[in-house]
Length: 201
Image (cartoon, rainbow, N blue to C red; front, side, top):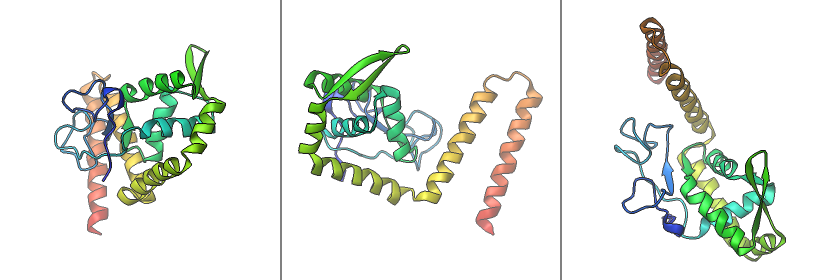
């Protein structure tokens, strides 16, 4: 259904021959939405999907820049948020596309607090307008993708799961005290039992 991002040699994460990766499913290190356990995105049984046709990413980035200037990481996070955290472009796809847009005259960059901030140019806005149909179709696809795979309630569950995973590993990996690690394990086990109880109710 969905094409695959291949401009600048960027393919899906984990694909053979990809340079820097492209787009990948992610549960904060837990594989895809129906993933098979911990590991890099797209590995160990994680569901692999396709989100964009070739060349779509430049329209997506320009549209985001038309809202406000952003640096590369903000673009990545903005798209991840629109997809409920389930899909994220890699820096290896975003930054070369930003460079390409600069070279085309559709975006320009300035330095601010050590960050490279990109903004759309008048030529970029004209290009977006000329391709309005394609841009609208892409963002309709993004919205439909997030809704069909993860409606609003499930998006909230997914975000809560990511918060727990991040908090767990960010904390546990720095602890040396077995008792404190045991407390984390017990908290997780109680949460798992309560969630299973909801399912049986």
